[in-house]
Amino acid sequence: MSSSTNPFDFSEYSSSRDDADNPWSGGSQSPWPPPEPFGSVAAPFAGPGGSTPGFGGAPADAFAVEQRPVVTAISQGRPPRAWLIGGGVVALLGLTAVALTLSGGSTVFAFIGWLLAGPAAFYLLAQHTVADMQQRARPVYAGSKAVQGTYWTVVVLGFVGIALGAWQIAEWAGRL
Image 1 (tube, rainbow, N blue to C red):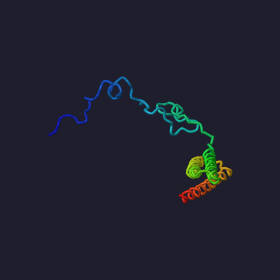
Image 2: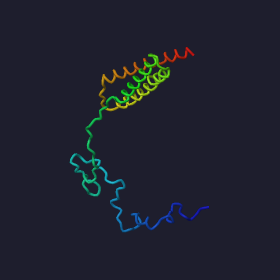
Image 3: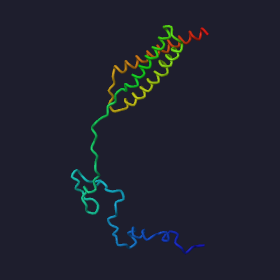
Image 4: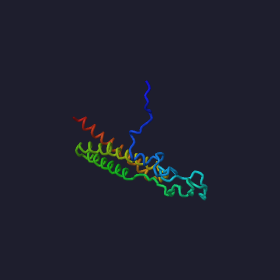
């Protein structure tokens, strides 16, 4: 059961345009030198002068790839101060609210102060830490002792606000 047709004959799928692009079809275009599908190509053996001849007798400089200039500026990382300042302000507002409760104010201020000095302030400190780690990943990082000291001051203010607020809330709950 042999067929007389050639299994590799795909002539029925060709078009007149395919014949124009096919250098072997006897068209008027010469197949040499073949067109470069990817644009210009760098000459692999060209020396500093680029005197090695390229394809088709063209000088190697005609095939040289354009090089981009080297960027000399180095991005410098700095500690983000906005999140840290925000955390400090929120922790101080929380301590102020707890102080209002200590001076005879409503227990609602203790709840507000605990929330501000606790979760809100430490959320802002966490955002500061994430942003600081991104800055530290840069090639150069300019750290600051003042920022580091401010960070720990905000942590202490937050813990004091949490402790005093929780104490006032516990006293209120104990009187129920």
